[in-house]
Amino acid sequence: MIRIISALILLVAVTLSSAAEQPLQLADSATDRHIVVPGDTLWGISAKFLKEPWRWPEIWRMNQEQIKNPNRIFPGDVIVLDRDGDGKPFLRIQNVRLQPKIYSESMTQAIPPIPPNVIEPFISAPLIVEINGLNSAPRIVATQQDRVFLGNGDLAYVDNADPSKQQWQIYRNGKPLLDPEDPKLILGYEAFYLGTASQVQAGHPATFVVLTAKQEISRGDRLVPAIRPALVAYVPHKPESQVDGRIISVYGGVGAAGRGSIVSLNRGTRDGLEIGHVLALERNRTVVERDETDKKVNVQIPPERIGLIFVFRTFERISYALVVQSEGTTEVNDFVRTP
Image (cartoon, rainbow, N blue to C red; front, side, top):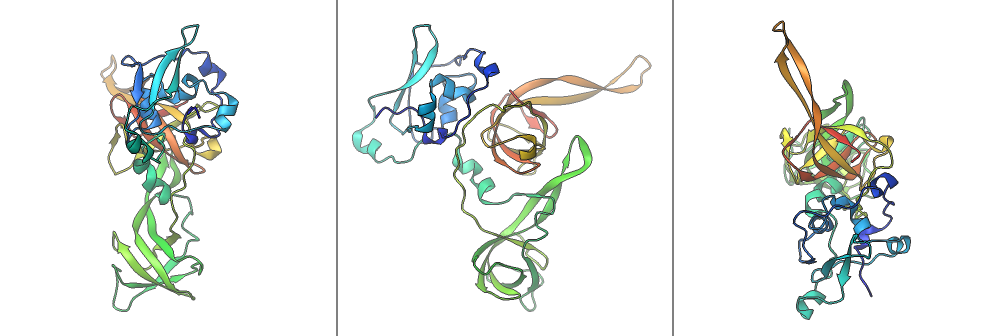
């Protein structure tokens, strides 16, 4: 069976005609072939051949049937850069592996599009809470006797907990996320993750035992059922409409992001963003100068494209994105736009 591309290419959107009109540009360091190794990602492999890795469905020449019934890339596969009769580049899987048979057959993990270990915490936990998102969540109404703050092994009494759910995560609202275009508008909050708890006895209130305490837990904190990360098709594609947004935070409390950083945007599903959208990063820079009267004035420097981000989780007003390409640092308030 000829392997075409990863199974995660399921439901990929057809590349916009505007992008298709632009010929594919090979990377300056593009080689004739690449041997897939553990730790590779589809984005990283495509970047070895293309200047715009998110356009990989084009260089793979995928038709609709192949998109609906894709195959996988595994460690040991050999990817070859070829050209058609018109000289246009395309990629194919060579029908031979250059790694030992026993080794290659033991590899059952298909190559993912982007590093799963980087984004997993942002899928398994609600690290962004939308406005009023925790208001109706179960609340700690009392603590174990003689305990102001709870730690590992302590008991908490929780109101409004679903008796069918045993494992929970504990949160409280953190820093508000403000819209740079309207500083008075709160888009949501960075959820302050406190730890985990298990429901040991249903009731009103229910009894919980704290399993792990990352921070001090107290009365008033909220609980959310623990979920397993949802594996979805992180397929890169260009938004079908014009997106014009801003970076509103960089995860980790730092002011600047680089390649591999997680950022949040002031655009979400209500603005047409979806998982897999690739957006261009543009530097938003204002400098202070003096005019001819020696008065200080703000001068807006024209936006400069500095990289690409990959949207992997969306909320109504906010989205998470991974910085997959960066030429310099990305800062809060930088632009994100349709590439």
